[in-house]
Length: 130
Image 1 (cartoon, rainbow, N blue to C red):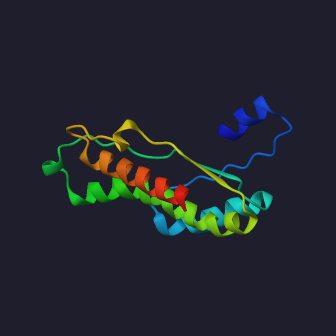
Image 2 (image 1 turned 90 degrees about the vertical axis):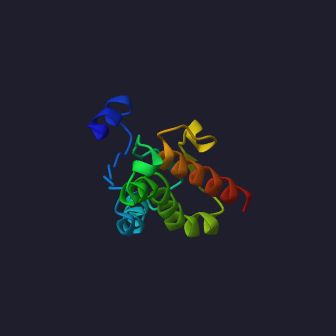
């Protein structure tokens, strides 16, 4: 469906669709390499995938906290770290990290989500400074 819509908008575009399961962190470096293989390089990574969760901190299992952190934070970090060596070598490459106001302040019932978004804001701020 995504590929079809892209081609409707720009028929001359070369479109490849690479499904990802962001909860499977160990698979992401291989997926980044596969994406690079399509056209020889990746110029822009848009980290827009994620999951939301609503639940009070004291009622949320550590497994749910870990899942939200893996999908909303660590998956993006894994993909960026897979692409950074090539970007540094070429001195070119960009990350678009879609976040939330929850990355700047937390709300009741959003502990796991806010934690992941805070982590992402901190990581990408520091990475940009590097």
